[in-house]
Image (cartoon, rainbow, N blue to C red; front, side, top):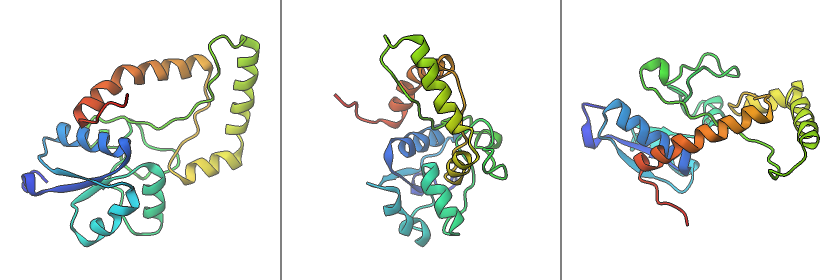
Length: 176
């Protein structure tokens, strides 16, 4: 890609793909041009035909397309390998320090009584710990994250600190 310079192209859609592409381009010292698509499936034909040199997809699209044999995943944008796909190298292992984990949370108003928060957390964690839930999440390239409300709050605060820089690098317009 470095040899191709500005003639290199990559496809991205959705904010996570746009951000990961911009971070990769900056950290790898590439001049590749981003081709933005409304949705990841819109870029698949261009990738398959060679019009794009590479693409960045969210875990659901990437895993389903890789499992169908349509794409080959070269690296995941995480610090550590996925438990669900331990054979996939991370971008960090390849010298590109990207760590963009996807996560979800159950969120309640700040004034919610601590016993209620603890009960909701216990119920969510019990569902996440189920073999069926783990298998479902891992099928889509997501490892279950069993956590505490305090861990979730720390993750949120961390992301609120680092994401403005990611947004700046990706030149995403601010939503008002």
